[in-house]
Length: 541
Image 1 (cartoon, helix red, strand yellow):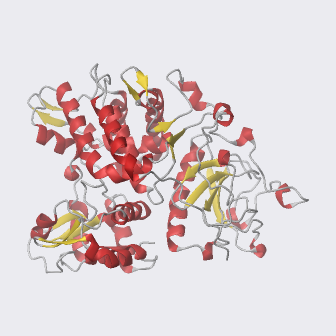
Image 2 (image 1 turned 180 degrees about the vertical axis):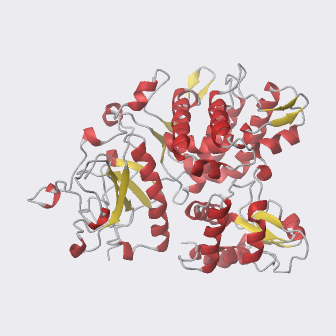
Image 3 (image 1 turned 120 degrees about the vertical axis):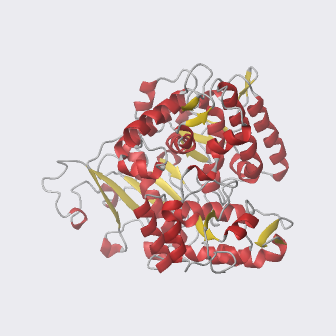
């Protein structure tokens, strides 16, 4: 097995124009010789030969990226099915000896008899292993998101490293001395008063959360408008439930000239798919997947049209310090349907790292500014604390459906003190909601109310992190499987790779003098916990 980047390997140094997804460990590429329209490949950044040579963390992220590939395909194609597979070894059909997972869209009538699926190979052309032809480069007509304008400029991000004999380097970094200046510029955006809707707050929070979730090596240099749209829907979802104000229950306005269009789109989706305001988005999404994807596509367009080309305008001048995009305010809806539309949001150097480092400070500032704008648009929403809890509070989604099952998994013992819970039990977010809003099943633990009250929004000490890390054991582990079963029965989100990335990103960046919660009112500095934290983080790899 070779772990170093291989200059001769087409997947170690792919053409940047083929990349539709750039994760911490995994890249998503459009296949140069597609077996069907939209054929995608998922490859590790590290040069690793087969599935069985990959680390558990790489396999987890590869599996999670299948859904990302599916969404990228569905943006431009309408397949009737999929084949997902891996070729291992020459006898298994592998011709490029760098692990790659195929996500192949299937279409009704593409073969006379599709029965058997992966038992049979699609009858397509395989010129790339005949003759002396090199591994395929990009075929522009088959790359569904690259605009010619982007190819002709220097805007292509450094998604892949320069050719080198060393291992693949981190994909982004930012000098620490620039972080404070970056924070000042974000504060300027928050103070910019020409926005008529709350979209800028949603975009800033969504960018921060996506960088946290895909953190490591400074976070991702490239995001897509589809990823951003999904996160914006998640942020607005609890806010489209009725708010009980002085004038009765109603959905709060989030635009000075009427309701914000994104909020109205989510409201209509709720009316059709989740009229009960307590239903979490994960359950509504699972029950109406096609309608949900139409919602995300509509939200994506609104983000492309409105906040993204306008967000970085301060006063009368544009300051591109957050990201570059391949369109401006003249963009039309029909452009989004073009096969050449570039939907990438290319983060500027150091931005991802700065957002990650400042997330604990920026989140409450953005939320407070957002709540203030909503209060100004809704005269009956005058209680600032209550309004902010309604908009962003962790308890907007009831955790009752999983409380008893979590008690049983933990043998009715508190996750933190291991004492028997004799009365009511609290469901706690292990990574605090104030740090990152995550109702994913792996982030939920049952605690004695006294322990939960003492921990509050503090980060837990190393011994708790070690115990929590055991939840991410290999498939077949009883706790992992039980959590998956609970999530399925309760209709709760479960995204272990995402939850893991957030934990790694937060804990790995803590300064030595930060104090972690141990028990009751006892705290310990990170410096005294560093070895234990390193051991726990190693379990999360």
